[in-house]
Image (cartoon, rainbow, N blue to C red; front, side, top):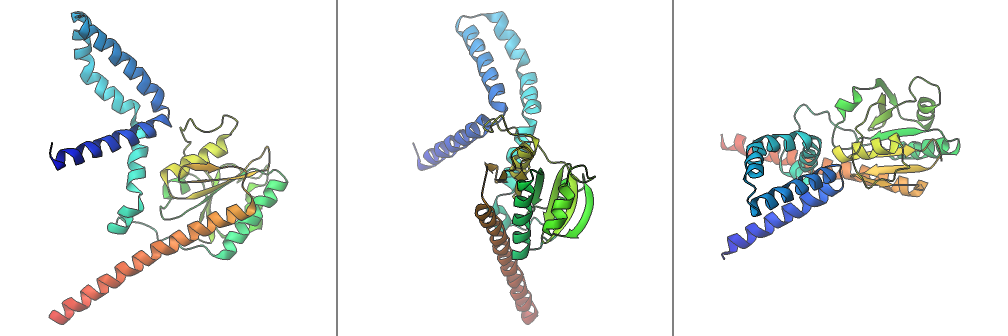
Length: 278
């Protein structure tokens, strides 16, 4: 066995492992178990030479492959989206097609966000706030009502006040501004979430699975604050934890800006060299 064969086996093993881990946390796990049961029956039919069943299984194979693609389409799309938003790809290639530049939010915005969330928590006002990072959430922003106002704690509290036109749905924050309210977010299919969690929490995890945003949830039942980041839900967090996570997102944006700055500098150096050669 050559070194290439060993590397190939390792790569395939890692891919299969991560695929099974990914499938296990979604509804695809139950579907996969059903498929495995059918395959077991087909294998028994082959061993016991049940020719009719084997013939039917052979004819249905192509149809079954198409059915699997259709059934697993949401999960496959989510996996490809996760692969496409890895930072290594962003740093190596410039995929900024028709992209809106994200502004870095300030320390004052962090303070206002934290203040608003815990003031709403005291009176059990439900809230769902998406803090946009590098991936622009235009498709979800369009599902809501444009606000485009400077973020303050009072603005957020007024938006989520019960019986007001904008209190349903999510608010999207870009930089220091509230860009949209009453937005619809995708719900997660994860089976690991507790059954006592409502739509807000599932939507928060859902948007964190398809983007690099940080989403804050204020529970209408308990007043507790939770956050979703990178597909993980952190429940009942305190103000200091929330502030640190927002600062982490803020720093991550700064790091990305540094990469873009170095990219621009490299382009400038290349341009100068070309001009000097001419």
